[in-house]
Image 1 (cartoon, rainbow, N blue to C red):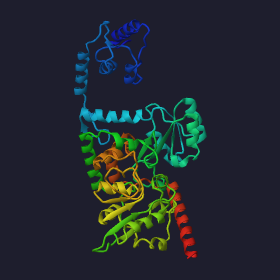
Image 2 (cartoon, rainbow, N blue to C red):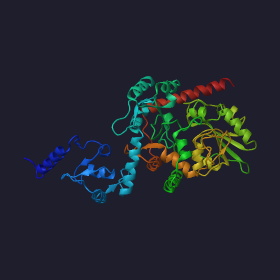
Image 3 (cartoon, rainbow, N blue to C red):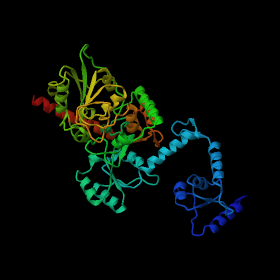
Image 4 (cartoon, helix red, strand yellow):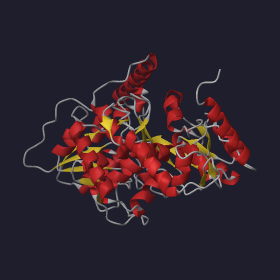
Amino acid sequence: MAEPGEDVADALLEQIRDAQVGGAFWAGDNDPWTVAAQAESVKAGIDDELALVAGLLNVPVIGPDGARIDPALLRVALKRRIAAARYRDCFNGAPTDAIQAIAQLADWRRHLDGNRGIAAASGMAFWKREAIRQFLWDGRRAPPFLSARRGLRRARYGQGALAIWPSRVPSTLLGEAQVQGVALVRVEDGFLRSRGLGAALHPPGSIVVDRSGIYYNALAANDLETLLATHDFSPALVERAARLRARICASGVTKYGQSGGTLVDLPAGRRTVLAIGQVDDDLSVQLGGGGITGNLDFLARVRRAEADAWIIYRPHPDVQAGHRKGHLADAAVLNYADAIDSGSPLMALVQAVDDLHVLSSLTGFEALMRGCRVTVHGMPFYAGWGLTRDLAPPVARRGRQLLLDELVAAALILYPRYLDPVTGLPCGPEVMTDRLASGAVPPTTWLVGLRSLQGKLRRFMTLTAEYLHG
């Protein structure tokens, strides 16, 4: 037996169906914004969700009586619905207001819209794929992970783009994609990465998805550089960036995680310089290093620029762990530097020295956020905007002067994507900062242990060969 009101509802649906000559019936399981935007008119009651959305889009709404509903009445109904609802922050459960809820929904919409048209993904390490699948979900599906050849074919036939991890696809892929008319979307770790290093197989909590290039390639334009060069930074956005920067600095969060250890003793009364080593074959060195060939070349240039300074060399943690190229023998380092340090808390050391010298390391950006002086030998994304001492030739695409918090706004708010490790939802950098600052450590799996053992074995072999050859 029908419940009270069901007969009336059925009759109303019949009227709507009968009145839709050449139209379509909305079952309610599709995105109402997409449905309404494609319609010439919508036939629904004044309190129907589809009618309210149509009213916001200025699409005519026809009521059950066949007359058009006054748009002003639709706005009143919508205001009533919004005011009557109660909202909670989905990340911490705290009460929030409609403005914040709408801002969060808009951010999710931006995230999903940014994934439209990605037909396949290639080059993603298998241990990152679950996170990448969530990052690249477009609201209906995530792109399949395929080899570069199969991914290119699927993107070509589907008239979509191929998402790639640049360092893990064949060098010939770019040329093949251009010939076949396939757009490439480059994916990389973000700048607030996760609670563990990628070398230890901890999946990223942040990535960047760049449709025009990639941020570490100074040889060509990219989405981040375009943001920095052209975006009109509103006062509200700059203020948000300033609060975020203060939050990050107060929490001690960095890309490489919070570090312990004891600060190395610095000589009194002498200029001190910290030189940051990198991975020799990293794409950021090859494409943003200003022609510098590796760590030894970089150190020699630091000494030429700082002839009388006391220089500390800091090896890259992935090189120290034995995972990547770039190891230098102590004797080679000490030809140019006065000390080697890998045990000091990095940000404390950065803030203790008189100057930080980098090639293209993200440490330079983190130092800028903490108000430190930074000398740059390459051309990373944060150079060329009047915030650093730049020793490399300038990039013509850059040139306008930026405030520090405008740089922060583009690099940490507008450009990357974040995935909350607690809820699994896309989030903002503020939530990610709080999660990273919580001190929780990702679980150690057998794969992480194996990776660590592999790195130790490589490092042992390197040091043994170094010893045997004097």
